[in-house]
Length: 118
Length: 164
Image (cartoon, rainbow over all chains, first blue to last red; front, side, top):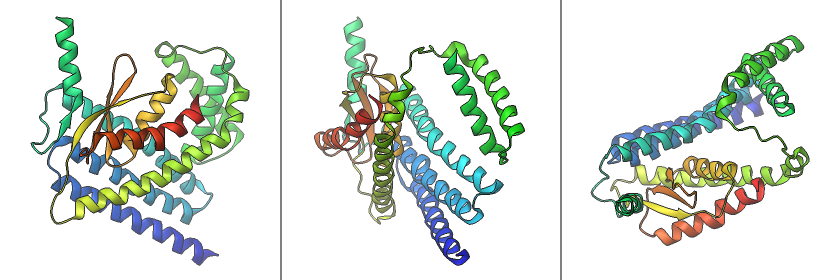
C-alpha cells in the first residue's frame, strides 16, 4: 500500500517538475509578453499543482497534505486572474504584439469605440 | 444576513485547511476571522439576498462534470503547448480574437474567462463593456472561426449548464 502511493506520488512529482521546466523554457524562447504569459502562468502553474498533488498523496490526510491541497487550489484559482490582469495592463499600456501575430480584434474594437465617441 | 453566516462558516473550514488542524476551537477561530473579513469587504459586493440553495445542491453533478472536462482539457492543452515550446523551430501564429458570449450572469462569465485563462494556449484579456464579447489571446490564431467554435462547444456549453 505504501509503495503504491509512493509510486503514484513520484509520477505526479516528475510530471510536475517536467511542466515547470517546460514553462521556464517557454519563458526564454517565446517572443512577446502575451506568449510568455502562456508559458509561465499556466504550464508552470499546472506543474506546481502537480508537485502539490504529489505531496498530498505522499503525506496523506495529515497537516502537510491538507496544506498542500489548499495551496494547490489557491494556485488554480489565482493564476488565471493574475495572467488576465498582466495581459490587460500590457495591452492598455500599448505594449506591441510580436510581428508574427496574425490578428488583433481587441485593438480594432477599441479603435472603433474611440471613433464612435468622437 | 443568512448568506453572510454561510460564507463565514465556509471561511472557517478554509481556515482549518490552511492551518492544518481540524478541531472545533480552530473552526471557531476561523469563523470569527471570516466574519471580520466579510464585514470589511462587504462594500465591494452587492449581496444577493435570495440565493436558491436547493438549486446549488441540484447542480452539483453538473459542476462535477464541468470540473472533470476542465481537467481533461487542461492536460490536453498543456501537452500541446509543451510541444510548441520544445519544438526546434518556433511555429506560432499568436493573435487576439473576439469571441461572442451567450452567458449573461456575472458568475458564468467569470467562470468562462477563468477557464479560458487556465487552459494553456488561450488567455483572456478583457471583456467588452456590454458583456457580449470576450477577448482571447491565442498562441495559435491562424483559424479564428475554429477557435470560436471550439470555445463555444467545448467550454461554454458546460459552464452554461453548471452555472445558469
